[in-house]
Image (cartoon, rainbow, N blue to C red; front, side, top):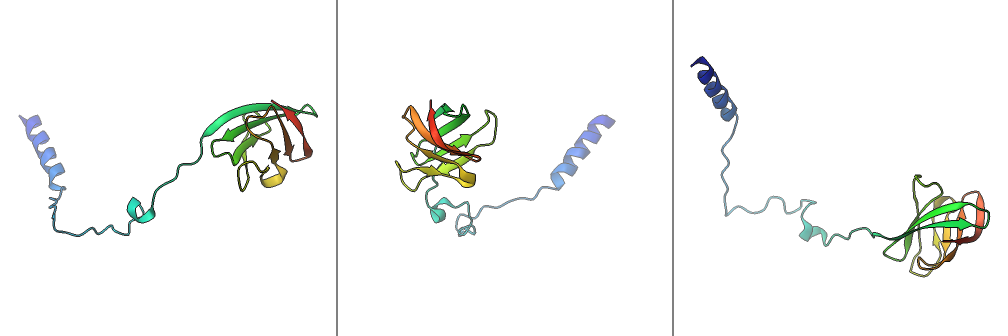
Length: 128
């Protein structure tokens, strides 16, 4: 009996902290300027996905990993298999992609040979 009384008191104490909430259907939206309001911010564009991943062997025997992105204007370049990617981009599709630190790629994702420059190495022909 004592146990039942304690459980009942604990439940009553937990419910005592709750406040009743009344929803007024005539109330205007107070969150009209909320940043999560998609109507105010316009449509959300997702980042491009990876359309293909290729491993290139360059003329100096260096290996470069490239993830080509679906927008046709960007790619992620890595000089180590598990390394951090560096993004290279072009103003429009078909132009050379350039990035920070001297990274650049000339060529298309479907091409077997591209010209890649990485820091410390000049641009050179690389084959997939």
